Length: 359
View 1 (cartoon, helix red, strand yellow):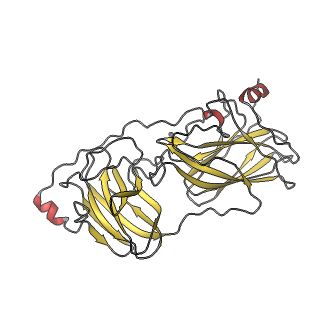
View 2: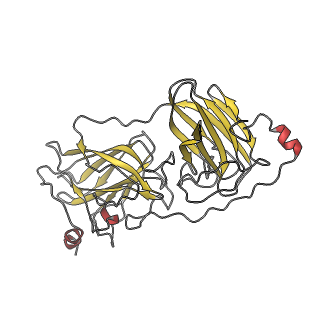
View 3: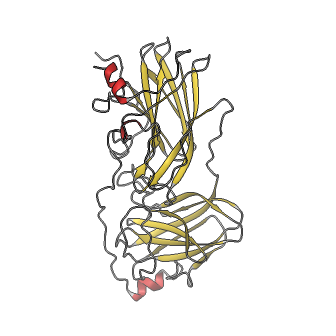
């Protein structure tokens, strides 16, 4: 029987988010959509307080919280942005002009809308500053944010006008609900004793060759970390996206201490996953313990690991698209692992060496 006991799952998540590290991120299967029907004049009159047809006729939002319902049916397709989905759109759209009442962080949401929405934000001069297609790809049908757009932690300047475009995926249109409210910026604090991962700045077109585990082009790569005298490691993890559908993946190696248990804590500025593996053979991975966290909400899990055994943690983002739709994008995370053996030397490990340990 394996030395790994049944592990603790602390969250439910979509199959796409659970893809084993051996899989490369790829564009998801095209989503179904509903073509926008034509509105009657009575329907348009009933929706007179909804968003305008263009930037010039955008409905003003001057205070928060703000909530409005409306429809994109009967409106023109004036604007489009694929929000990193790779799918161009022909859907009708409406526009709101949001003047930030104060400098700070805001949340703009289309959750609860009746069709597959997109949301993007432009400054004056049509300069795109944020974009989202699906808020969380792990959600299931019936959730208010399923296939709906939402942009959190949008940083706005007092008095600046931002154009909020309510749009649809591909040709989708229909009834929507939009809300705008002030929010608390998600900023993961950095402990004083933290180890820097050393990940190079993320860039589009960049080949990931740094502790990228099973997704490395040049063979398995892992960052081995040595515990402090108390048997703990705290590491600053750089998370993010380089290109469309390409998440950064980070692998770390640890050695379990004498107790037979390790404690893993994880906090990220975006929805993220820390997966605990009993080996690093990409062709035969032992089922992982999964720790899934929402932005700035820390999570933890205790995992049984035999004393003196090497184990691995892979950290990556939950969604395959950046939340604000601009590439490249990065976010900070803090991974804390305790219950480790002390005095274990730090050394790089090749894929061949790792596989040899389990043959």
